[in-house]
Structures are given as C-alpha cells and as structure tokens.
Length: 252
Image (cartoon, one colour):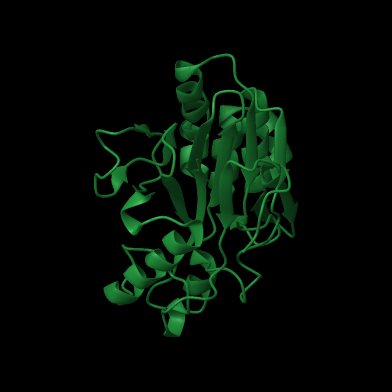
C-alpha cells in the first residue's frame, strides 16, 4: 500500500494506491487483482474487491468502479447513480461521504484528487489517449462546475516509467504535431523513442490550475513485486494481466 504525503494530512480522507499484494488471486494474477474485465476467476476478483472495501471500512457496494475505455468522459457520482454497475467513464468525482472511488491501472496513470475547500474527491484513469484528448481538463472542469472557488490537490500514482515506455516514431510525431512543446516529454536513445507519461500528466494538471501535486513514483513495468503491468505481460507472452486499484473516499 502506498500513500500521498499531501493527502495523508486530511483526517476526513481515506486514500491508497494499492499494490498487487495481499489478495486471493493466483498465477499471473497473484494476488490482489481487481480487474473485473480480466480473465481471472471472478470469485477471486470479488474477494479482492471485498478486501479493498473492508480496508476502507465500507461495504463492497460503496466502492465505485468504472468501465474504462481510454475516453475523456467524466461522471459525477450522486445518490441516483452510485449503485450503477461499472459507470462508463475514465474519471469520476463525488461529494458523497462513505463512498469510495476506484481506478484500475496496469501501466496507465492513476490520479486521485481532493478539493479541500469543497470536500470533493475524484479519480482519473490517465492513459496517453485520455490524457491527450482531455480527461484531465474535463475532470477539473467538473470540479469547477460544483464550485469554481476550489483548492484541488492531486496525487499521481504508480505508472510505467519513462525508461520503460518505448513508443514508435509515429507516436512521437503525433504528439509533436499537436504541439512542438510536447518534445519535452520524449527522449531518444539509439533511434528509439521513449515517452514520459508521468511528466505529461503532471504538466496537464498544472496548466489546468492544480497547484499542489505529489507523485508516488514507481515504475510499474520494472517493479514486478508490487505492480501489474500490461507491457510486461505482453513482453512475457502472458495471456492476460492483472489490474491494481487506487482509491479515495470521504469519511464522516
């Protein structure tokens, strides 16, 4: 379990970037796989999600997950939709107490947010596509719709590291065609291009008005003991991969 140094200061807040450990799954999913869409034994996944809920002190029905599709869709969770099964979005926010928001990742960037002035929480699934098409901007906008006088704190969790994220030249040129300033998020070694998605997400948060940002800085690709990794699974020719969960919850 890993925590934000900034968010730990708030006693009304429970948050965690969970590792892959202390769960019920076996094999390539060992052990805390929280991905309902994985090919893992469904009972094991549900037991893992129950473990997460219990660690927060909630019933499992109060842990809200998303059907993540690398979109820029944001949904506000309220009394009318909080029990919907897997809302289709890549970010969710809420003001509800004792309702945990969860984001699943396996190399993509989990971001958790807290507006300390208005007691609004949120989480973002920030892959390269969602980040480029506006998932971060859209999430901040949803916070502002509730109250534009805010003080948003963000924590950027474990994700694939810049030295592990090799991309094609066409990927690199795509980002440079959007803005030549994006060159700062890439480096080239022996004609191979690498993308620093953590820095890109931090930059997006900053230019959208988030002044307080910390990073739980682990490379999910390299840190095999603690994190699942889509890219590592592909490299090992594994048939599937697990997902880690990051959560945030407002407590009474």
